[in-house]
Image (cartoon, rainbow, N blue to C red; front, side):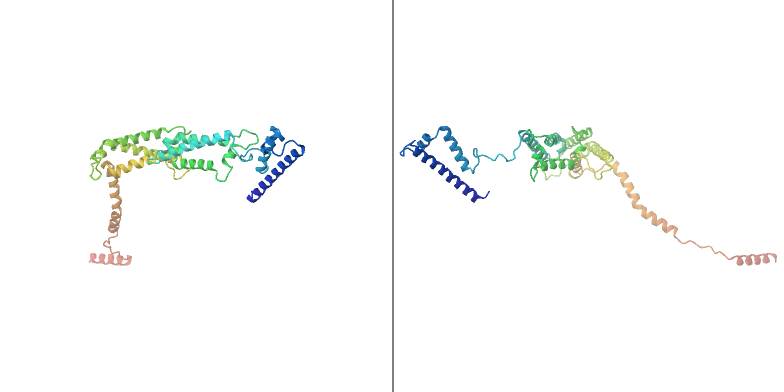
Length: 335
């Protein structure tokens, strides 16, 4: 509303109130109800009853508010949430805060799927409740319309989409059962082997832990933890193959981020930190195949050279020359 128009309306209301009071006072003087020496406040109490005086005060407040009756408050037509919808919104807010904290705390090392899946299911359930709920009054819109589509930002929708996108990128469904109620057996087994391998690394470390400049001896780690590392690596390869078989239609599928990050950590420790080499039993076939492939071009060019070597050509005489030569030989033999 225009401020100048509001000021003008208030001035006109005050003028109307003054005219009303003047008319009441003049009528009282004319009827001799009160004397001229009475105070204004006493004049009004003598002229009007207590109930009429309250009505005059309410009328004056209404005129000062621009013609609206009632106390100074928000307009009744402003949109407000029903108690049921407000409770659903608060439930979603609390669940979202808990899930956000869990995701941030499990960011490094990655522990998203194994620690946050109950909270994710809780947020999804709260979002379903909002989508299905309806307000108390028959005239009100549904809670879904009020909370999800009432403004341009749609904060609740943005948060829900963020959680779903994060969950899909992490591929947490691959770590859970079909109903996503708990971790799958293969995931639990892998995580147990992972913890066992890390424990083996820690128990077999040599050298002073407080000095980072000294060269440590990791031979005991490589020797004693080889079986644990090999078992973990083989299980990871089997899980990858099973995942590829189950998702042939989808290219570039991954295991859940918790399993992938655990395997990456283990491989970096094994190869870079501990510098553990692959055992001889595994390298001999690789070396043999590599040497055979390297010698293939040598064998090929050597065989080509041998087959292309020029040999002595045999002289092949024409048929006429052969017959004349044989006839001459016969004559010489007859003589």
